[in-house]
Image (cartoon, rainbow, N blue to C red; front, side, top):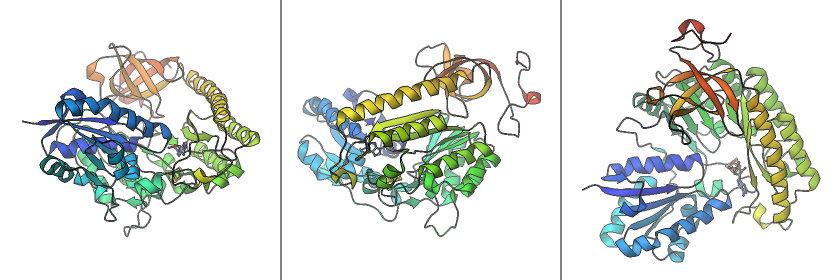
Amino acid sequence: MAKRIYIETYGCQMNEHDSEQILRLLERSDYLETKDAQQADLILINTCSVREKPEQKVYSALGRFKKLKEKKGTIIGVAGCVAQQEGWRLLERVPYLDLVVGTHAIPSLPQLLEKVLTLGEKVCETDFDPEGRYLDPFLPERPLSSVKSYVTIMQGCNHFCSYCIVPYVRGKEKSRPSQEIVEEVKCLAQKGAKEICLLGQNVNAYGKGMKEGIDFPELLSKLNEIEGIERIRFTTSHPKDLSEKLIQAYGSLKKLCEHIHLPFQSGSNRILERMNRGYHRETYLEKVHRLREVCPSIAITADVMVGFPGEEEKDFEETLDLMIKIRFDDLFSFKYSPRKGTTAAGWSDQVEEQVKQQRLSILQNIQKEITLQKNQALVGYLEEVLVEGHSKQNREDVTGRTRTNKAVNFKGDDHLIGCLVLTKITRAYAHSLYGECITTWKKKDPLRGKPDPDELGLLEGIPS
Ligand code: 5AD
Ligand code: SF4
């Protein structure tokens, strides 16, 4: 009889994708996913340690599963960045934990599990794998349940920003051969994917150090040709490595969506230098200007931190100034938190928690207003939406995203899931848009994905 796996995922998209890969891999060892931890034979917590919160979550999650271990002997494991970082310490600290699987050890999970089951041993595997076997995908055998799929194209990072744990827990940059990525995307398209999101800690570094001599924009061109795929996105990119060639790709590749996530972290050159980011605010502003020249409708989102060691009021004001100048479509903002083992964690000029909190609130209030204004500016306009599923708030609504990655809800039923739909935006909120379905269309205008009126499924009702 099939065994059941329950997996809880915290953190970034890379982690979400790793969890999906774990499920596909263990399906081959007869494990089926359950959404109910009580029913599980194996519980895995897949975590991220980039910011403090996810790390704390691991310990509270483990606490919740202690009773299950006592009652049913459920196998409990931790995977991901926290597993990589803590290793045996986790097993020592949590006596009912059975398994620790580092970021490069996922392919060995069936063998590690076997060891736990047959020998009754606690197992910890956190070695880095220079061969890159952890990058080999587990392709889906069944039709996909989602129209969106993630594809890892590279992993790791060579940048060593002074606050960041990633290079320590994900290892050095390593890219996958392009042909392998193309084959994976073709397979995902056959299984129903309409949109792919390419993942990597720094996708702009794709291809570096590979014999193939291919770069990220060239990879995008190859993927743009794959039939069945309507949209291509990627995350995340480093401003320093954002090349003119990639900017140009926004003007020439039809499937590349008009959105870029480009973390800026701080608007102060002094802080950027201490962060070891390798660019200045002027370079960032110039790159955004070029992106908007090439692709005027591009949505720009970013990550930003407040309270980095040594951040003074005037540095923070420069961050606000940059945000206001750029008017991001959305921002992910964080309070700096020291990560053990990183350079900045050892600095003595840490900023007080209260100051961090104040700065974060100011920044978030300003951004909330900008996001709302940007959303309001779309009211009355037409937007192409790829329908992903039912809305969580209202069963009569479906939900999807614009090419600029904004969530849109509108009245509609099941048959629209997976379709490209032309919607008219009628209402704007801080985190989403509401619209009405004008039509689904068969083909798009060759220019930048706008609907071609001659090809619309239904012509009536389209506002002029
Ligand atoms: N503290 C707070 N935020 C961090 N990030 C990375 N490291 C830290 C840290 N030590 C944020 C950065 C990064 C995002 C993924 O997480 O903004 O872009
Ligand atoms: Fe971390 Fe900097 Fe690498 Fe991004 S570029 S993963 S912030 S070290």
